[in-house]
Image (cartoon, rainbow, N blue to C red):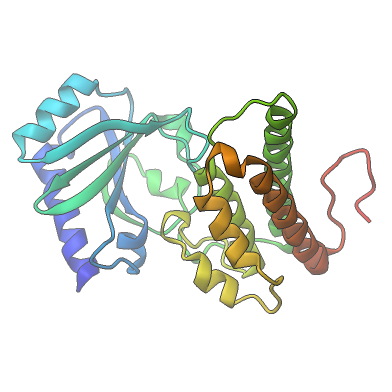
Length: 265
């Protein structure tokens, strides 16, 4: 029932905004938990809009006001935000018909990724660039994906250690850390297409055949302890988390390495 309400709200929004007639709009997709049917009363409606050319902030704001949207926040995230699992020019957040929306705008080269989706508008057959939950991966592709995430996690931890040695402090990019961890656990669960925005880490961890002790609590602590006093502790926890994930991946694939100059034995 909730998914039906969210989908109807999305269809009403697309029609109100005139996207089917807008020559700049190539396609509109409902994504995330609303598309997968896993949304609840607290879920946002995630809409992805493929455009040939970006629509200006001024025009988007005026259009959103005109169709009755409120609590509008333009460009809350965009292409330079490393926490996002997909690339988009901007993401706007607002309320339409008493439902919270996250609407992302994507240029032609930002479309090739996999998640659950429902096509609302597709003028050029762009659905073929996307893949839903039936998409399958080879064992090698899953291993390479986990390895890529481990490498990025390792690089981030190294960067944080560098700041620590300089006695500098910055707020850690906690959303990016969580996305990397969740994606690795998704792959280990053989659920690589499960939408990352809607992923529930507790459920994913409980499905693992083996789970390191204190893994979930360590992740929770890492996500919540973000201040100067906890800096050194957080780096240590990140290293322990990385070691746990690396061990899980090696147990699954054995041949995996962080470095290209060291054999993946």
